[in-house]
Image (cartoon, rainbow, N blue to C red; front, side, top):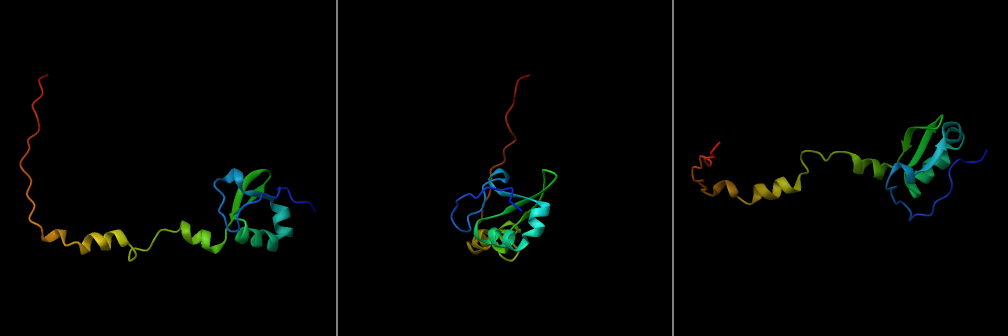
Length: 104
């Protein structure tokens, strides 16, 4: 059974820039050749599965999926860096500013 996608040459593991650049698989082809779809997701990037010509799912390598997940609260290097500066010890005062008068 021939694949619906054409082979694209990209660096190994390179993520697809957008949905149009992903290799497309009809659902029945993806089911029949699942091991190949998964292998290609790990080596060539995300693989798009379609049902009746409509985008239905994307097969990703675990590394690509992990990059999409939000970072845990405990791993906020910027927040830790700013807290470590000791800015709360500074005595900063702002002059009162009531705005400007505008003639209407």
